Every structure is written in structure tokens, then in C-alpha cells.
Image (cartoon, rainbow, N blue to C red):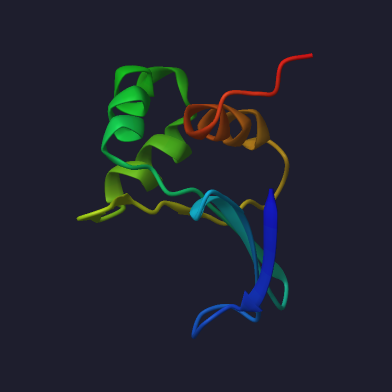
Length: 102
């Protein structure tokens, strides 16, 4: 997995992307007193999420619903304040890429 540091653009101080094959799996962002987690969901990935949406926390559902849809998918940005949504984040990542076999 390729890992890239970047500036966080206008809204963030730092960006750390996880990429494979030229596609971003997810990105972590940081600024003073705040972190962000973003996962890009393409057309097929959005369909998988939407078919299982009711099994995600209401906050994850709301952020997804409020995120604009672009030509290449949805880019929901989460700003967690604790670890309560981490299981949902892992499930979102599983939509993007199946875990390695053991």
C-alpha cells in the first residue's frame, strides 16, 4: 500500500493518504484539535453501502446522505471525537477492499 503525506488543503494542516493501484482507499487529516477520516465510495461501493445502510450508526448515515455525489462517487468526511464509530469505519474500508487472507 502506498502512503502519501500531503498538505491538507484549505481546511486541514496535514493529509495522509493510503493508495493502491492509483486509487485512494482512505485518507486521514489533521489540524489543531481535530482529526478527519475520509473514504471515497465509487458507484459500486455506494450501492454496497446503501444496501446495508441501516446497519451503520445514524451519524455515519447522515454524513453519507449529506455528502454531495460527484462523477467519481461520494467523498464522506468524518470528524470523530471518540472511537465509537471506528467499527463502522472498518466496515466502510471493507467495502473498498476485502481484508487480506490469513
